[in-house]
Length: 290
Image (cartoon, rainbow, N blue to C red):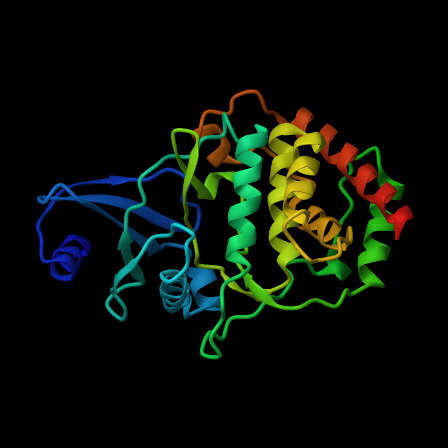
């Protein structure tokens, strides 16, 4: 059924298909056409997510269409399969995930520059999706394993009693190294636009930073922050980093499958927990400057 839809949408027969690694709530598949070109389909497999957000396919479609006029390399929308099934077809972006180079200054500068370019996108009034936090601060549980209980309590209180003003821009909402494609050492694509929305630019920065902390440590995440802030007119506040931390770190913190799929084999729970404790200390210390 999926193959027939793809052939109808592209006008070409499918030679072979292969499931792509990294999909959690969706099945991502690469389809090679008889022309030699390839396209990528997303099939939503998480029914609970779809129940909460029934317009997921339309959301990604509009996000991709919005980015077509920008310089940031993103997939182009081809077709949607609804209402037959919840799937979207897009062009393939050449490149691969390179977690072996995302801790290098040249790569971090490209990550920061590309993210800043995304945030310059002009958003039409018809683009309806807006930011809301994934964190229910009233329901955050402090992990039993942390040695930084007081820092967690301070972080929760800080987020509970603060709400920074912001100028909404287009945000990717899931910007991190496994959603970035490289050709050699050059950043060549940003994928996974299903969560894009209007919101605070520093939400994207913070989400990328917590991933960088877990992968490589605070020093790398701080370099990325500095590289971004040199391009931005925003005033930094640790609020968004703390919020991203509370969203990411929990009792069951473990190595993300997408990292191991991309060749990272030196991480384990002990390393992640140690980096988490270091990072929350670092963020609370930053509050002294505000």
